[in-house]
Image (cartoon, rainbow, N blue to C red; front, side):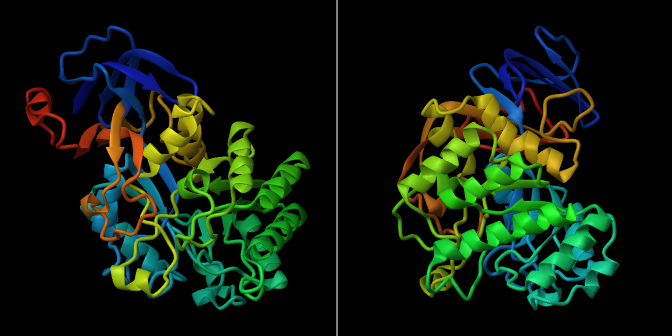
Amino acid sequence: MELLIKECRIVDESLDFIGDLYIKDGLIADYGKNLDYDCKFIDGKDLTLMPSFIDMHVHFREPGYTYKEDLYSGSLAALKGGYTLVNLMANTNPICSSMKVVEYVLNKSKEMDLIDIHQTVSVTENFDGKTLSHLDRIDERVKFISDDGKGIKSNISMYKAMVIAKEKGISIISHAEDEDLTPIDFRLSENIITVRDIFLSKTTGAHLHLAHVSTKEAIQEIRKGKREGANITCEVTPHHIALWSNNYRVNPPIREKEDVEYLIEGIKDGVIDVIATDHAPHSEEDKEKGSPGISGIETSFSVSYTTLVKSKTIDLKKLSQIMSANPGRLMKVNKGRIEKGFDGDVVLLDLNTEIIVNESEFLSKGKNTSFSGMKFYGEVVATLRKGKIKYLNEDFPIQFWRDRVDNR
């Protein structure tokens, strides 16, 4: 299969030019100006082409909680958001503490053939905070371990887990929370575990990835740790950089304006490596009962683009770096950059279109969002995986595509 995308603005972490992209057999085969290949083509004039986005932190709820989300609905939502690779957390039912659950998720994903999925395994067995023996049975398909959704309170458990992670060459994704402190001071709860985990990472040499960082103090500690050579990376969510003094229930909570300013400064100077959605869909009933989380994968790009690029805080190349290239490197995949031989996973965007968030139009089962009714810029027009259109925005003329592409 061959596809040529013509006369679009092509942007990744190091490129920004008007030109063409040629995909052959699922891989980027060529890019440049005035390419001429005898194949199907898309007229990309007035559109921006970027590497598709990679989400290192997602909850698709399957197995066990499919009334909230499942692999199919989550994959459709990801494609609508411009994502072709996601990393799923382990807080399913059963909790993903075995290769049996990993194999179930990977096999079903392969059958659907919509997006690529990685399944994270829990750090402690069934999130019990102490048992690590199940880690002896994971294989090379597992790149990350995490108890996300619960903090690991035991110092010795986290220390031993990092020793194992270092030996296996895998990464620990830390949910920095001491649940004993949370009712007293949620800020202290995040900060104290952040400090501990950075110190343990420096001690063991294990790679630590800090999830959903939200406080100015945590950013200060991460900056210090990186300066001292710690093997650490971190992520922030779109809702933690776009909102402040907001009571919408998420974990960690939305912070204050000063925290947001520190997070954005961390993006600008490279302390923050990744934007990840922490996509956490819930039913309306569960949300009313207080379940924390935002269904964020469909709004991630527009919120991030408007907050960071439209405001002239960073450029589009930097946004591509933290939404595609850096997570691609951390996940060790052949995606995230416009480079010959990389997967033909790209997203076409209309950066000038203003959108109003309407959760009733979400493809995710979860309609829970703090952005309802808010206006942002940047519309996903189409998402391609290995050169095939997997999502097409129906607001753009169907005939425009059908005349030129027959692989819908």
